[in-house]
Image (cartoon, rainbow, N blue to C red; front, side):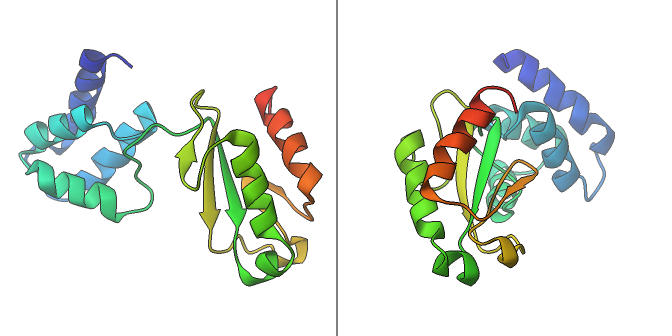
Length: 157
């Protein structure tokens, strides 16, 4: 999104919250929903519009895991690292994703197709090892599952 367009959209989102308390998190959520992440320009605009210090906005945005300061992939791959998944090989699955996508934990591919995140637990221990891509769960994974999953999401899902 072009910088001035981003600033204008952010101003529109912040407008109903001017002069009111409790608007920062809803504004951050809506801006991230529109842009996909919270770029510095958007946080500066929020600071100006809500008359809050940029440091406070940055502090809130970095405190909560729901907010992201860098662009994220179209497909968010969350690999479970809980005990059951670990025992059944989720570290091998995670490492295979890193190798295939050429990224590390919490990084995004250059083409913005994938972001790779380790998570503490997905609550699907019976399917261990398990991962989610966006909202879809994939369980009972093997090494060869990784390439199939990547191809599936590269070409359409």
